[in-house]
Image 1 (tube, rainbow, N blue to C red):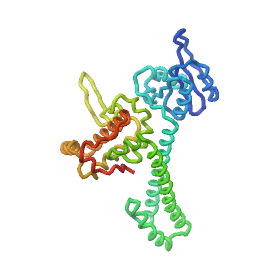
Image 2 (image 1 turned 120 degrees about the horizontal axis):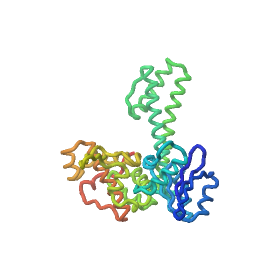
Image 3 (image 1 turned 30 degrees about the vertical axis):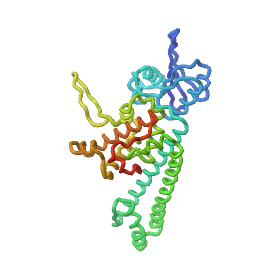
Image 4 (image 1 turned 90 degrees about the vertical axis):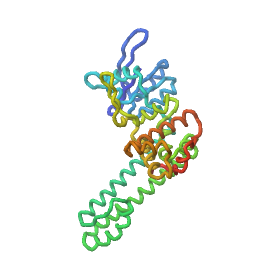
Amino acid sequence: MTSSRSNWRISSRVHLVDAETGEIVNRALKRGAFLEYFTNHAPCLIGMEACGGAQHWARELTKLGHEVRLMPAKFVKAFNIGNKSDAADARAIWLAVQQPCKPVAVKTEAQQAVLAMHRMRQQLVKMRTMQINGLRGLLAEYGEVMSRSRTSLDKAMPGVLQRLTERLPAMLVDTLRDRWGELRKMDEQIARIEQRLKVWMKQDEACTAIAEIPGVGLLTATAAVATMGDAKAFRSGREFAAFLGLVPRQRGSGGKVSLFGISKRGDTYLRTLLTHGARCVLANARDIGSWAEQLKKRRPLNVVVVALANKMARTIWAILAHQQPYSRRDAGTASVCSGGPA
Protein backbone atom coordinates (compact mmCIF):
# COMPACT_ATOMS: atom_id res chain seq x y z
CA MET A 1 0.00 0.00 0.00
CA THR A 2 1.33 3.41 -0.85
CA SER A 3 0.29 6.98 -0.30
CA SER A 4 1.06 10.07 -2.34
CA ARG A 5 0.18 13.43 -0.81
CA SER A 6 -0.49 16.50 -2.91
CA ASN A 7 0.64 19.68 -1.13
CA TRP A 8 -1.67 21.88 -3.17
CA ARG A 9 -5.00 20.08 -2.97
CA ILE A 10 -4.39 18.78 0.56
CA SER A 11 -5.46 15.32 -0.51
CA SER A 12 -3.86 11.89 -0.67
CA ARG A 13 -3.77 9.13 -3.22
CA VAL A 14 -3.73 5.46 -2.25
CA HIS A 15 -2.45 2.73 -4.55
CA LEU A 16 -2.60 -0.89 -3.44
CA VAL A 17 -2.75 -4.39 -4.85
CA ASP A 18 -4.75 -7.00 -2.93
CA ALA A 19 -2.45 -9.94 -2.25
CA GLU A 20 -5.30 -12.47 -2.41
CA THR A 21 -7.48 -11.25 -5.29
CA GLY A 22 -4.94 -9.21 -7.24
CA GLU A 23 -7.35 -6.26 -7.33
CA ILE A 24 -5.67 -2.91 -8.02
CA VAL A 25 -7.03 0.06 -6.08
CA ASN A 26 -6.00 3.64 -6.86
CA ARG A 27 -8.24 6.19 -5.18
CA ALA A 28 -8.10 9.68 -3.75
CA LEU A 29 -8.65 10.41 -0.04
CA LYS A 30 -9.55 13.65 1.64
CA ARG A 31 -7.27 14.82 4.42
CA GLY A 32 -9.93 14.26 7.07
CA ALA A 33 -10.58 10.68 5.95
CA PHE A 34 -6.92 9.70 5.62
CA LEU A 35 -6.37 8.22 9.09
CA GLU A 36 -9.88 6.76 9.21
CA TYR A 37 -9.16 4.76 6.06
CA PHE A 38 -6.04 3.17 7.55
CA THR A 39 -7.69 2.69 10.95
CA ASN A 40 -10.18 0.32 9.34
CA HIS A 41 -7.47 -1.45 7.35
CA ALA A 42 -5.45 -4.45 8.53
CA PRO A 43 -1.82 -3.68 9.50
CA CYS A 44 0.33 -3.50 6.36
CA LEU A 45 3.42 -1.96 4.80
CA ILE A 46 2.83 1.67 3.80
CA GLY A 47 5.24 3.52 1.56
CA MET A 48 5.19 7.31 1.53
CA GLU A 49 7.28 9.90 -0.26
CA ALA A 50 9.41 11.90 2.18
CA CYS A 51 7.73 15.27 1.60
CA GLY A 52 6.25 17.99 3.80
CA GLY A 53 4.06 16.49 6.53
CA ALA A 54 5.24 12.93 5.87
CA GLN A 55 6.89 12.62 9.30
CA HIS A 56 3.60 13.47 11.05
CA TRP A 57 1.58 10.96 9.04
CA ALA A 58 4.25 8.30 9.50
CA ARG A 59 4.06 8.64 13.28
CA GLU A 60 0.26 8.51 13.24
CA LEU A 61 0.18 5.43 10.98
CA THR A 62 2.79 3.69 13.13
CA LYS A 63 0.53 4.17 16.15
CA LEU A 64 -2.16 2.24 14.25
CA GLY A 65 0.17 -0.74 13.90
CA HIS A 66 1.30 -0.19 10.29
CA GLU A 67 4.89 -0.38 9.06
CA VAL A 68 5.80 2.91 7.37
CA ARG A 69 8.71 3.52 5.00
CA LEU A 70 9.51 7.05 3.90
CA MET A 71 11.07 6.94 0.44
CA PRO A 72 13.42 9.68 -0.86
CA ALA A 73 11.76 11.68 -3.62
CA LYS A 74 14.73 11.21 -5.95
CA PHE A 75 14.45 7.43 -5.61
CA VAL A 76 10.68 7.43 -6.25
CA LYS A 77 11.02 9.62 -9.35
CA ALA A 78 12.80 6.83 -11.22
CA PHE A 79 9.64 4.69 -11.05
CA ASN A 80 7.25 7.35 -12.37
CA ILE A 81 6.60 6.20 -15.92
CA GLY A 82 4.68 8.41 -18.34
CA ASN A 83 2.93 11.65 -17.47
CA LYS A 84 3.05 12.95 -13.91
CA SER A 85 -0.16 12.83 -11.88
CA ASP A 86 -1.24 11.93 -8.36
CA ALA A 87 -2.25 8.46 -9.50
CA ALA A 88 1.07 7.93 -11.29
CA ASP A 89 2.97 9.17 -8.22
CA ALA A 90 1.12 6.71 -5.97
CA ARG A 91 1.90 3.86 -8.38
CA ALA A 92 5.57 4.92 -8.47
CA ILE A 93 5.78 4.86 -4.66
CA TRP A 94 4.18 1.38 -4.66
CA LEU A 95 6.88 0.18 -7.05
CA ALA A 96 9.70 1.95 -5.17
CA VAL A 97 8.82 0.62 -1.73
CA GLN A 98 9.35 -2.94 -2.97
CA GLN A 99 12.94 -2.19 -4.04
CA PRO A 100 16.01 -2.27 -1.76
CA CYS A 101 16.63 1.29 -0.60
CA LYS A 102 17.59 3.11 2.58
CA PRO A 103 14.36 4.83 3.72
CA VAL A 104 14.29 8.15 5.51
CA ALA A 105 14.17 7.65 9.29
CA VAL A 106 10.82 8.27 10.96
CA LYS A 107 11.69 10.77 13.67
CA THR A 108 10.08 11.37 17.02
CA GLU A 109 8.46 14.71 17.72
CA ALA A 110 11.40 15.63 19.98
CA GLN A 111 13.93 14.87 17.25
CA GLN A 112 11.93 16.80 14.70
CA ALA A 113 11.70 19.72 17.14
CA VAL A 114 15.50 19.83 17.36
CA LEU A 115 15.78 19.88 13.57
CA ALA A 116 13.17 22.66 13.44
CA MET A 117 15.37 24.71 15.80
CA HIS A 118 18.32 24.11 13.48
CA ARG A 119 16.32 25.20 10.44
CA MET A 120 15.20 28.42 12.14
CA ARG A 121 18.75 29.17 13.26
CA GLN A 122 20.03 28.50 9.74
CA GLN A 123 17.43 30.87 8.33
CA LEU A 124 18.42 33.61 10.80
CA VAL A 125 22.11 33.20 9.94
CA LYS A 126 21.28 33.46 6.25
CA MET A 127 19.16 36.57 6.80
CA ARG A 128 21.92 38.13 8.91
CA THR A 129 24.46 37.54 6.15
CA MET A 130 22.10 39.05 3.59
CA GLN A 131 21.59 42.07 5.83
CA ILE A 132 25.33 42.63 6.22
CA ASN A 133 25.97 42.30 2.49
CA GLY A 134 23.04 44.60 1.75
CA LEU A 135 24.37 47.31 4.08
CA ARG A 136 27.87 47.06 2.61
CA GLY A 137 26.47 47.33 -0.92
CA LEU A 138 24.33 50.38 -0.12
CA LEU A 139 27.15 52.17 1.67
CA ALA A 140 29.55 51.46 -1.19
CA GLU A 141 27.27 53.55 -3.43
CA TYR A 142 28.25 56.58 -1.33
CA GLY A 143 31.97 55.82 -1.22
CA GLU A 144 31.93 54.10 2.18
CA VAL A 145 33.79 50.83 1.57
CA MET A 146 34.63 48.43 4.39
CA SER A 147 35.88 44.88 4.88
CA ARG A 148 33.59 41.88 4.67
CA SER A 149 33.77 40.80 8.30
CA ARG A 150 31.05 41.60 10.80
CA THR A 151 33.66 43.06 13.16
CA SER A 152 34.76 45.56 10.52
CA LEU A 153 31.16 46.56 9.89
CA ASP A 154 30.38 47.19 13.57
CA LYS A 155 33.62 49.11 14.00
CA ALA A 156 33.08 51.35 10.97
CA MET A 157 29.32 51.99 11.14
CA PRO A 158 29.28 54.77 13.82
CA GLY A 159 31.77 56.86 11.86
CA VAL A 160 30.08 56.11 8.54
CA LEU A 161 26.66 57.17 9.83
CA GLN A 162 28.11 60.35 11.28
CA ARG A 163 29.72 61.29 7.96
CA LEU A 164 26.59 60.44 5.97
CA THR A 165 24.44 62.61 8.25
CA GLU A 166 26.12 65.67 6.85
CA ARG A 167 25.51 64.64 3.22
CA LEU A 168 22.37 62.54 2.90
CA PRO A 169 18.69 62.90 3.91
CA ALA A 170 17.91 61.99 7.48
CA MET A 171 15.34 59.39 6.41
CA LEU A 172 18.06 57.28 4.73
CA VAL A 173 20.53 57.62 7.60
CA ASP A 174 17.87 56.63 10.15
CA THR A 175 16.88 53.62 8.05
CA LEU A 176 20.50 52.48 7.77
CA ARG A 177 20.87 52.84 11.53
CA ASP A 178 17.72 50.73 12.06
CA ARG A 179 18.95 47.99 9.72
CA TRP A 180 22.28 47.91 11.55
CA GLY A 181 20.40 47.58 14.83
CA GLU A 182 18.47 44.63 13.41
CA LEU A 183 21.75 42.70 13.26
CA ARG A 184 22.02 42.78 17.05
CA LYS A 185 18.47 41.48 17.38
CA MET A 186 19.32 38.59 15.04
CA ASP A 187 22.43 37.87 17.13
CA GLU A 188 20.27 37.64 20.23
CA GLN A 189 17.74 35.34 18.53
CA ILE A 190 20.50 33.01 17.30
CA ALA A 191 22.08 32.98 20.77
CA ARG A 192 18.74 32.06 22.39
CA ILE A 193 18.24 29.16 19.97
CA GLU A 194 21.76 27.88 20.68
CA GLN A 195 21.13 28.14 24.42
CA ARG A 196 17.95 26.05 24.10
CA LEU A 197 19.82 23.47 22.04
CA LYS A 198 22.53 23.38 24.70
CA VAL A 199 19.95 22.63 27.39
CA TRP A 200 18.50 19.78 25.30
CA MET A 201 21.98 18.45 24.58
CA LYS A 202 22.82 18.20 28.28
CA GLN A 203 19.66 16.15 28.86
CA ASP A 204 20.31 13.76 25.96
CA GLU A 205 22.90 11.04 26.60
CA ALA A 206 23.51 10.35 22.91
CA CYS A 207 24.40 13.99 22.22
CA THR A 208 26.69 14.12 25.22
CA ALA A 209 28.47 10.94 24.10
CA ILE A 210 29.26 12.03 20.54
CA ALA A 211 30.19 15.57 21.66
CA GLU A 212 33.42 14.02 22.97
CA ILE A 213 34.60 13.50 19.38
CA PRO A 214 37.02 16.26 18.29
CA GLY A 215 35.27 18.53 15.82
CA VAL A 216 31.77 17.60 17.02
CA GLY A 217 30.20 20.41 18.98
CA LEU A 218 26.75 21.62 19.94
CA LEU A 219 25.29 21.98 16.45
CA THR A 220 26.80 18.83 14.97
CA ALA A 221 25.91 16.63 17.93
CA THR A 222 22.27 17.70 18.17
CA ALA A 223 21.76 17.64 14.39
CA ALA A 224 23.37 14.20 14.03
CA VAL A 225 21.24 12.55 16.73
CA ALA A 226 18.03 14.12 15.43
CA THR A 227 18.78 13.31 11.77
CA MET A 228 19.92 9.73 12.29
CA GLY A 229 16.90 8.58 14.27
CA ASP A 230 17.66 4.95 15.17
CA ALA A 231 21.37 4.29 14.62
CA LYS A 232 20.76 0.56 14.20
CA ALA A 233 18.78 1.27 11.05
CA PHE A 234 22.19 1.60 9.38
CA ARG A 235 24.19 -1.59 8.96
CA SER A 236 27.57 0.12 9.32
CA GLY A 237 29.29 3.43 9.73
CA ARG A 238 30.09 3.47 6.03
CA GLU A 239 26.40 3.20 5.22
CA PHE A 240 25.72 6.21 7.44
CA ALA A 241 28.54 8.14 5.74
CA ALA A 242 27.07 7.20 2.35
CA PHE A 243 23.65 8.36 3.58
CA LEU A 244 25.23 11.78 4.18
CA GLY A 245 26.94 11.86 0.79
CA LEU A 246 30.49 11.61 2.19
CA VAL A 247 31.59 8.72 -0.04
CA PRO A 248 32.89 8.83 -3.66
CA ARG A 249 30.57 8.72 -6.64
CA GLN A 250 31.02 5.59 -8.73
CA ARG A 251 30.65 5.04 -12.43
CA GLY A 252 31.21 1.63 -13.95
CA SER A 253 31.19 0.24 -17.47
CA GLY A 254 32.69 -2.87 -19.00
CA GLY A 255 33.72 -4.20 -15.61
CA LYS A 256 35.76 -1.08 -14.79
CA VAL A 257 34.65 1.14 -11.91
CA SER A 258 35.86 4.73 -11.65
CA LEU A 259 35.68 6.84 -8.49
CA PHE A 260 35.02 10.58 -8.49
CA GLY A 261 34.27 13.26 -5.89
CA ILE A 262 31.82 12.72 -3.05
CA SER A 263 28.22 11.98 -4.01
CA LYS A 264 26.76 14.89 -1.95
CA ARG A 265 23.55 12.92 -1.42
CA GLY A 266 21.46 13.00 1.70
CA ASP A 267 21.32 15.72 4.32
CA THR A 268 23.31 18.75 3.10
CA TYR A 269 23.10 20.54 6.45
CA LEU A 270 24.65 17.75 8.55
CA ARG A 271 27.28 17.07 5.87
CA THR A 272 28.26 20.74 5.99
CA LEU A 273 28.55 20.70 9.78
CA LEU A 274 30.79 17.63 9.71
CA THR A 275 32.97 19.15 7.00
CA HIS A 276 33.39 22.43 8.91
CA GLY A 277 34.16 20.47 12.08
CA ALA A 278 36.85 18.47 10.29
CA ARG A 279 38.37 21.64 8.86
CA CYS A 280 38.41 23.14 12.35
CA VAL A 281 40.28 20.10 13.69
CA LEU A 282 42.91 20.24 10.95
CA ALA A 283 43.41 23.98 11.42
CA ASN A 284 43.54 24.15 15.22
CA ALA A 285 44.84 20.81 16.46
CA ARG A 286 48.35 20.77 17.92
CA ASP A 287 48.70 17.18 16.76
CA ILE A 288 46.13 15.79 14.34
CA GLY A 289 47.51 12.26 14.51
CA SER A 290 49.62 10.10 12.23
CA TRP A 291 46.72 9.06 9.97
CA ALA A 292 45.79 12.62 9.03
CA GLU A 293 49.43 13.73 8.84
CA GLN A 294 50.28 11.01 6.33
CA LEU A 295 47.17 11.78 4.32
CA LYS A 296 48.03 15.49 4.15
CA LYS A 297 51.43 14.69 2.62
CA ARG A 298 49.97 12.98 -0.42
CA ARG A 299 46.49 14.48 -0.91
CA PRO A 300 45.05 18.04 -1.20
CA LEU A 301 43.72 19.70 1.94
CA ASN A 302 40.06 19.53 0.89
CA VAL A 303 40.37 15.79 0.30
CA VAL A 304 41.80 15.38 3.81
CA VAL A 305 38.93 17.46 5.24
CA VAL A 306 36.30 15.26 3.61
CA ALA A 307 38.13 12.09 4.67
CA LEU A 308 38.17 13.28 8.27
CA ALA A 309 34.47 14.21 8.05
CA ASN A 310 33.78 10.68 6.79
CA LYS A 311 35.71 9.27 9.73
CA MET A 312 33.75 11.48 12.15
CA ALA A 313 30.45 10.24 10.69
CA ARG A 314 31.54 6.61 11.12
CA THR A 315 32.62 7.30 14.70
CA ILE A 316 29.26 8.91 15.48
CA TRP A 317 27.46 5.83 14.16
CA ALA A 318 29.69 3.44 16.14
CA ILE A 319 29.09 5.30 19.41
CA LEU A 320 25.32 5.47 18.95
CA ALA A 321 24.84 1.98 17.50
CA HIS A 322 26.98 0.15 20.07
CA GLN A 323 26.23 2.57 22.93
CA GLN A 324 29.86 2.85 23.91
CA PRO A 325 31.73 5.97 25.04
CA TYR A 326 34.22 7.65 22.76
CA SER A 327 37.77 6.36 23.21
CA ARG A 328 40.60 8.75 22.41
CA ARG A 329 43.03 6.19 21.06
CA ASP A 330 45.07 8.84 19.27
CA ALA A 331 46.75 11.11 21.80
CA GLY A 332 47.02 13.83 19.17
CA THR A 333 43.28 14.25 18.71
CA ALA A 334 42.80 14.51 22.47
CA SER A 335 44.38 17.96 22.40
CA VAL A 336 41.67 19.40 20.14
CA CYS A 337 38.82 21.43 21.57
CA SER A 338 35.52 19.78 20.64
CA GLY A 339 33.60 23.01 20.29
CA GLY A 340 32.75 22.39 16.64
CA PRO A 341 31.68 24.89 14.01
CA ALA A 342 29.33 27.76 14.75
